[in-house]
Length: 73
Ligand SMILES: [Zn+2]
Picture 1: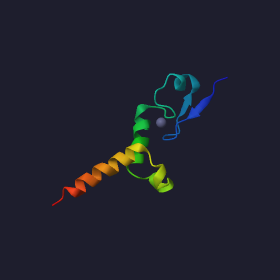
Picture 2: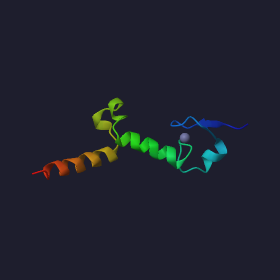
Picture 3: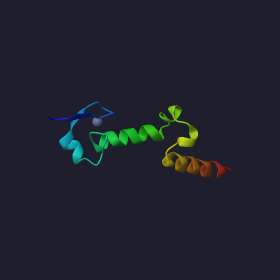
Picture 4: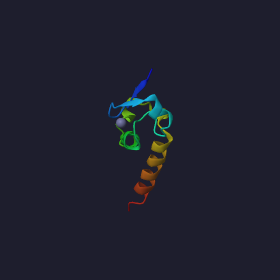
């Protein structure tokens, strides 16, 4: 019996065999993984996420933006 997972980005079915050797789970490909990453950094998911549960990458981006702001004189 072949189990199928579904990529959360493109809804493509990914077989368990593909998924088992994939480094991009739960995504079907590195491309979809990156799309998801860019959605995070774009803040689209942040709306649904409490501020104190933001991913570490967003904390780092926020710090970098703060540094840029301080530099504007
Ligand atoms: Zn996909």
